[in-house]
Image (cartoon, rainbow, N blue to C red; front, side):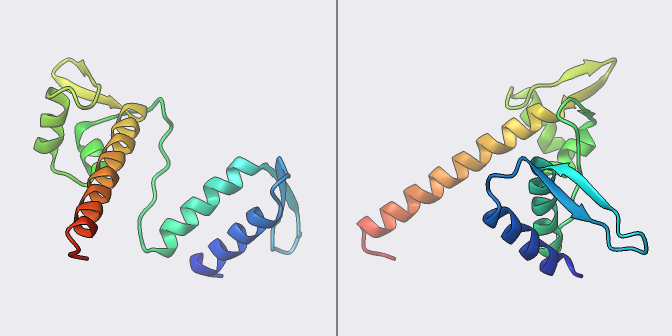
Length: 136
């Protein structure tokens, strides 16, 4: 089964079984075991499968993990010098360990959410201006 097929199946299950706090999964091997997992784990699996289906790489990072500047830059898909300018500009919280900067994953994710909101707001504003000017 491909990620494209799997994500459809998992999302359909989640959509049709909204009241379940846990989900029973059947392992398709010679033992046919079943596993009971929290619904939140299956929701996370759906997000991972969606990224895989889109051909994107996926990393799971605990919120309390500390990242190097290169790891954080890779997550943002920006250069390391640009990330450092964000850190020094106060956009993302970090701490120094000797001469090295360390960024908490939760701080980076907070910045990413804020940046997404800013981008969406700017796109909405451009759309509104385009409609106002009857360009679109």
